[in-house]
Image 1 (cartoon, rainbow, N blue to C red):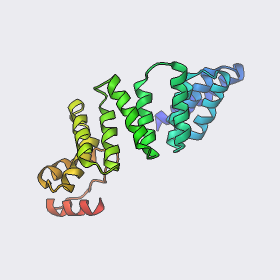
Image 2 (tube, one colour):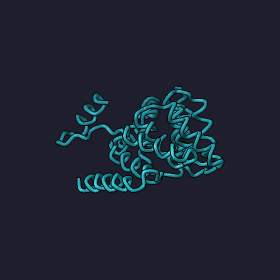
Image 3 (tube, rainbow, N blue to C red):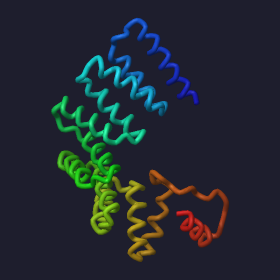
Image 4 (spheres, one colour):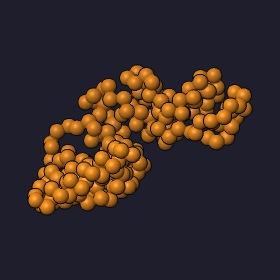
Length: 215
């Protein structure tokens, strides 16, 4: 709570600063970042756009505007902003490529998604989340053997990455490998979208059955 109050205090200070410097692009940008942290995404978008109106080549503003659009699922605008940031910078940015891969995956343009994940891996073979992203794409395409390969590849660079371990468990269970599948299935509690862990004691086998039903 104290952190939120501190961040909100920063917004007041930045807004006061604008009274003295109404054409300072960095103040608008900083306000956008603050609102991103507060998860007030429409306010963040407003301030990033104001920063860009003062400097049409403001790379950081475009990148963060893309993130804000992604949060509200305006995926085509997300792509436009990331591509604009790349166009201005004229350099290979693995983080932007990774975000583009994820965004194209979200709109089910899987060929483009794989294209950008591959660009990430070519530039940085240790970028484990790009392998996981490819795994998710192949999982959506129901090409489970390829998905399994890329989830496993992720673990070569991040051995405890619970999202990939959980994804692997589902493929193993689908393939009838119940010994490894159930073991790896425990990682769902640490994955990005974990199932709720039971807070009361139950015999192991009963707890397992209930969790499967919830899944």
